[in-house]
Amino acid sequence: MGLIDLSAIDLNLLVAFEALFEERSVTAAAQKMYLGQPAMNASLARLRILFQDELFLRIGREMQPTAKALEIAPDIRTALEQIRQILAVSKIFDPATAKNTFKIASSDYTSYVVMPKLLELCRRTAPNIDFRLIGFAKDCVGELLEQREIDLALGVFQNPPRQTIQMPLFPEHFVGICRRGHPMITQDAITPETFANLLHALFTIRRDEVGEIDQVLAKYNLQRRVALTTPHLLVLPEIISSSDLVSAVPSRLVESFAYRGTLEIFEIPVKTEPWMISMLWSKLTDQDQANIWLRQMLKSVCEGI
Image 1: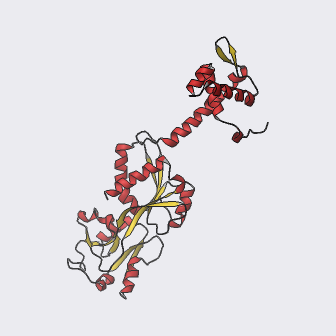
Image 2: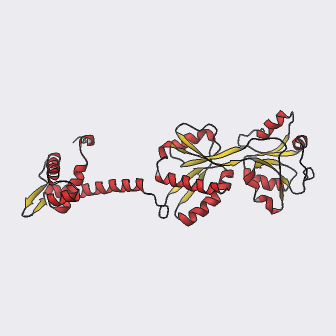
Image 3: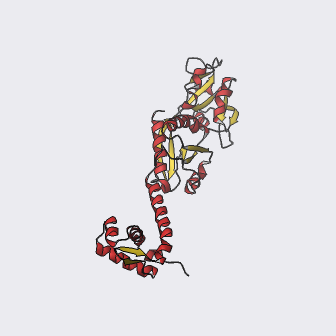
């Protein structure tokens, strides 16, 4: 037997069948479905044609199911229940009881700044929610979102991929860090020349030795020596605190470290432009209730950063 073309069938007929099977009365089934009795009679007539069986016969005061009706009733009930569950899940997301696992593409910096506050908020309001932090290359983020390998991404996205939506979270800027008592850093503002002559550590994931600071120094006809490059931003405060290297890092990375007595923060003597940390998600999940909730939580925690 070939497959039935569902586009040619009114699936409300299955709901009518369910009501007739449960009520054993055309009148009661019509009332349950908020229909008139003629409309229910018409649905029964169409059901009989669809299944090529009488389905329900009046015996005494009740409409009794035929053998065919008894045979198909469990499957129809299961199908309708599955549809109801699908619709219920798509409309309702309760963080207090949800057991979702969210995958967030994030660098160590954005993870360090955002995740402690997000986890603390979820501990109180969504105790069964889990998170997976995913490392990513920016030129792959669109594909990761489209393929649902991540739910959203955190970072700087100057040219967002197609079919994505971007929301700014908080601004960021560079500050200089050095070890406390560094012989070349004093309370007085240092000059660009002094800054350029220091030994520098550079965070880079491109495996090169050129960062934004180098581009700015070039405008002053200055060049620095990069004595260390690392793809791991979070190791820099520890390295800087035990050496004579200096580094330009996002300000929020070292706000807490500065109070440990090992680091000093200083103003970089050349002008650098601030940037915006944003979250990025796919248009495919823009109306997904779980994804909406996650974005609201991230926006909430970032408002206090």
